[in-house]
Image (cartoon, rainbow, N blue to C red; front, side):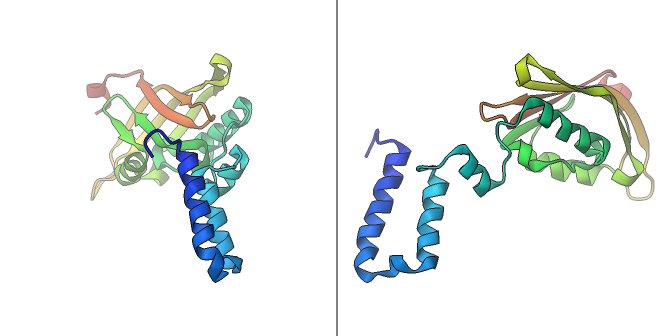
Length: 189
């Protein structure tokens, strides 16, 4: 089956399953029908972007101004730079998060941010607005933050400012997050 497109393999597998299970009439069971339907949708066979979004909850191909509004809410209301509490439906699962120190995968960024900072003692400010760049392919904003480190007995604070650029993939989800600080790493740490 080398060279057969993935959807072709999925179709072949579903047809084989239907033929094999069909004589037993188990495919008439609502549970089995839902299982086969879920398999078809998960494989992408015959599914539209909207159907895929309903399966994984992602908000693909949003208008850039709508996406900027969501990012603004995440920043101002949820303080996501200090809490990692952002709207996951607008980020690709393979999104990378880069700051002046390193690059992190999404799950490590969330876990690390929540462990490193005390969100309730930190403060993030949006300087200006979330700007739409390059015909909606990128969003960018300036920020100023005071971060409270989560050390055992004390929570020392550090202030920094910078620019964050969010890059969108072909499906409109954010695939890259990149911070550029105004201060040097030694100044911040």
